[in-house]
Length: 514
Image (cartoon, rainbow, N blue to C red; front, side, top):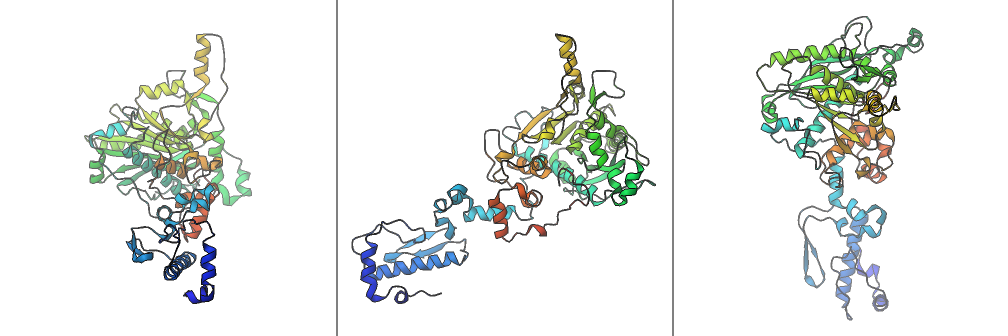
């Protein structure tokens, strides 16, 4: 489209045009790079050149032609030139005047759009893998992560996100094959780990002590996995890459546990009565009945979760005897609750057990103050990652039982009241610039949303960091209705079809992270 002066402004009308434009109030046009303060006398040649350039820029904008990111020289009136380095056409527009409610000048600038496009791509980008070296015990919680949480240390951020991805691998491993045979022992299961420097050494199973009538399976035979008592719940993995071992300062053993997925696991979650820990000499140490059931109950062809973990950890400790070892237990939702019970079990399995730390995401309360004291006595370190809007982290919440008065009443309160263990890293959905402030409960408890918030967290009094690196594609895929429309619409305009993201989806009852 070529716009000539003759076709746009006939010669006989030029004087009329120049007379009228003098009566207009002059505003700086962001499309006209040659704008100067008006003068009383403007030559027709300069006006023609200015008009042609203005309309040419407007045509480029309407046709959405992309501007190169290298240096560009734009001719200005009076044969002067203005150099613009790395700036596109949209950066010159005053978009905040058009979309003030969206802060469009910032949100829709080319630099921001390029960054958004990268975040919406499938390419995962992580914070730098710095060497932990002699500080690995500090990052593993020997000082309860003092001085590392607010503001959040870069190295710790990466470690937390990495352990969260181990839990995502546990979810994916279960959803790939949720059913288990009731006639024979399960076959070894392949788990796609996010970190190739680790290898899986043991599959873990949890069994419910309650069951549903057999007629339920007869009514819905295709959903038999929903009523099965034993289900694959996680795995044990060990780092076997020498370069990664050197970077971390030790050989790390990871135990990853998924959240609730079957009907009987949901049933166990609601068994909120508090009971004494089996084998404990202290009657004041109590935990939730349902969690304990999944931890201690044996299956028809699989040992209990407690037995499997202790057996495998003992084997690995013996195999790598003489090396610096650490045991890291990580879980989400139900897996976070079971992580505390597993940590309690492991810390007692051997006199020379390596340091034990728990990284839990969205975990409920597990036991009373007596149980918390028991973990502290065993030197089990717990970092609880909690979203302010996540209701799961506030349950169970049984009413206090008040018997007697004074010190006796206080003792009874501690005996029957649930308490959280460990150190808390508090996040907030409302801080994310991508999620709606009124995101629903499923989003606030979603594991990917947790990792998104961890990746963007700076400190309690700072906003979401602008250089967050975690990909938004999965969050958009799982929580599209909870993301701000500005970004869902922009994902479509960037030709990013969410259906092309091949994320493993549940073929069964959705877990909290799906």
